[in-house]
Length: 148
Image (cartoon, rainbow, N blue to C red; front, top):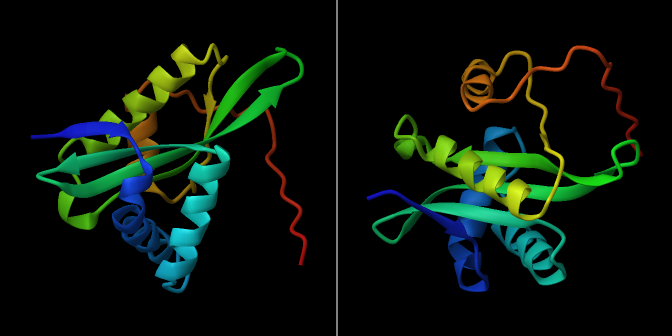
């Protein structure tokens, strides 16, 4: 049975383990205590919205969205910053269910849309997002400045 829901404080330990797997996937070193602290702050400060996928009491994936704003539209946007499904549960529809949770958050909050970025070489993501109704926007260049 598949199920998605908003993450709660009692999910923190299991969510931190899943978040750590996500970070390892992106070539970061494992640090479960720091992951737990980071997520505890996000949940406690209401800095982000996190939804989890769950099967038989086990967390199988999560999506984390951060609020941002569009000045030209004078509305909230949601930044879909993190989407991850545990390797053993991929291909079962969890990503699409989590994206649907993100879309419902967008609708219920009156936001104008959801933004995300993914690597050009992320073949799975570059197939997933269009299949969920996202459109690639080529009209702008994306730049980053890193504070080193």
